[in-house]
Amino acid sequence: MNILETFELLRSRRVSPVELTKDCLARIEKLNPSLNAFIAVTAESAMAEARQAEEEIQRGDWHVPLHGIPIALKDLIDVAGLPTTAASNLFRNRVASEDAEVVRHLKIAGAVFLGKQNLHEFAYGGSSMISAYGPVRNPWNLEHIAGGSSGGSAASVAAGLCYAAVGTDTAGSVREPAALCGVVGLKPTFDLVSTRGIFPLSKSYDHAGPITRTVADAAIVLDAIVGRNGKPNHFVSALNEPLPAGLRLGVARSFFFEDVDPEVLSTIEEALKVLGSLGEVREIELAEVPVDRTLQAAESYDTHAESASKTPELYQPETLRRILNGANTNPEELAKHREELTRQRREIAGVFKSVDFLISPTVPIPAPSISKLQKEPEQLRPVEILLLRNTRPFNVWGLPAISVPCGFTKSGLPIGLQIAGPHNAEVSVLQLAHTYEQRTEGRLSARWSGDGSPIRRQG
Image (tube, rainbow, N blue to C red; front, side, top):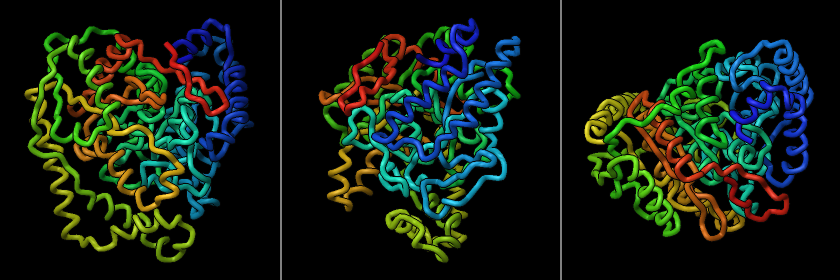
């Protein structure tokens, strides 16, 4: 069940946080050996948190809809007293001294933490194949990638190992794995959610956001991590408000629809028909779509320069190669790239004078095969660039963007629809995504069979 449904059961005391947590821990024990989605499971502390939440609920001390709900975190996010490995041998013995800001807010909301999830090492990739703990596998088909870099988080939510997860998104690392795993992934406006206490990949582009089963659940988690000391925010309450009339839905085919897999394309066209019943679909031309990765490479190198020089053997070779690619950017070039970023974020606002949203496939292709990429390692980087092509620009622009499930390939792999809006338009982005989800009965609550076969569509 989703968080809203579960919260009603908790509030009526038909289930307890202890029961929910035990169930999730049992599923992790059974399914994680195949999925490889969790790096660490904090069963003892999770049960203690669940018992505390149960006591609070029994005495009527209610918080918000996350109260007593078992969730998990990408292992790039600090929790005091726990390791933050970033899926790297470099950090195997690194223990966080304090909570990340998002963790502090989630604790205020009363969430139960199940553990830390696997990822692409240091979040520097879109496949979650490069990890000191091995690749994450897609719960819809174990022979395929889960996406990245928040692959473990998306796979966990899809397989019902937790009710929600918090990931990070620098070029699409929340939305891309969410699309490939058939769940919802939201990247909020740049700087709306604090990244303090999250190990950086590129500070100019880093975002944190929720991965959930439904749009409403994403709103619930966003309410919590934005942080208002446990007080309900407006994201959930706004979902059932009617969409304004005369919506203008922008489709930029000259970039976002290029080299799209035929099955993905046909599914997105069907989604556009549904959206067309809610407003006008307008074909538009974008004057500029950012593709340069120089600033990200330079900032990543700056973060890792010392350790990459002293202990290069502790990195996976491909991660080290990517880090070293950013070594030769001088301060003058960096300053120019940061000025350019400011200009791009300012000028993208002009696009929303003629449209209210930008609509695209989240990912141009379905989840690739793990074995094929292992046999042809030289293809990993170009495949990841394609996987993140449609999500990356929204990190540069700093716009809110969400991926929602919209269908499947014939072989049963999920396909995602991306909806983006202007800066600080999370409410309208969530409203449109929620409406689309309801219109299509598109709540794909993944239930993994345990034998690697595709999961039957739910809802």
